[in-house]
Length: 286
Figure 1: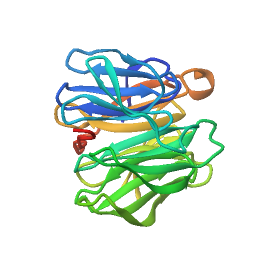
Figure 2: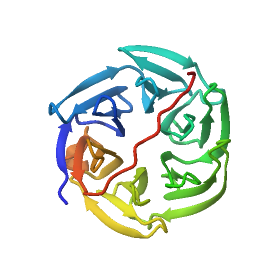
Figure 3: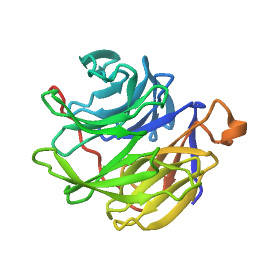
């Protein structure tokens, strides 16, 4: 499979692609530049949607607005070009920012943080619909990709610095997680697992930072497929399109293409012929 280049904004850290099922667009961010871009496949057009502070991830709210997760633990709603903060900050996150988030089946959001200088550990939080913030894990190296098993009984969570994708027991009713186990350990020297998504067969697609590739794993954690990209820092992936058989993939390193590859910082698309699972809507503050 050869990835198709869709848009190249030379993103420094292109991340968090997310398909908007109502607008039929894919959105993605360039984290340090605080920019959100969009691509409309029907019109074959793309552009800048928002520019502001650093955005480490976002979800789509049940009213179709975007919920942005920013620095210092701030959370804000982006609607009609207007940004409204609903959580100003999280104590202890003054020198951190969010890095990847996911809405769960009940509209809560799980989100991890990383230190701005990467020299301090991050944390994993759950934000409930009433905006209550609960710390679930501490001592995280680089918080990254999430996903849920098809039966909603287990949750995936990635710590890139540890080189691991974990799997937890997950209680949909309460949002509690437990029984942490290693689902995938990246081999030494083969890059770091980054953003991820789950397909309709229950297989995990994991972007591999510093390894020029997107990996597909069976529900048992066995590597089943590897797709190469012309970018060293493959950062995240999401299913999109009318039938959810397209995977949109973000990359990073666009500020130095000589080092990171000719496709560094671009958005790519691959039709894999396998349907993905629609992402859940968040309902924070609704």
